[in-house]
Amino acid sequence: MRFTPRGYGGHRRDAERVKRDGWYEQGVLAVSVDDHRLTWPERELVRQLGEKLYGVLPMSRGEVRNGK
Image (tube, one colour):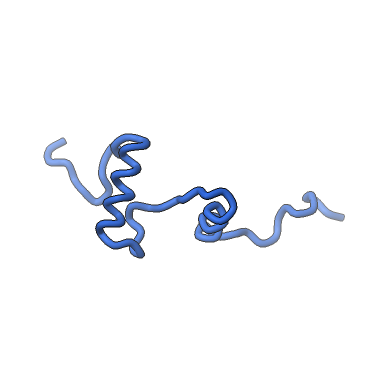
């Protein structure tokens, strides 16, 4: 007896596979600003695009505000 509908359960895709499938199937790109595979100019471009589309991050990763 099955407890889940057909197609549910079993093997789960990892995050990289989900991002890759999103790009191939829907043209959606999910990129982390901290992705080590990107060069500095590429990371900066991603950061600038994110700020343009969604606004500035509340607190930049890895940076500490002085006294605030």
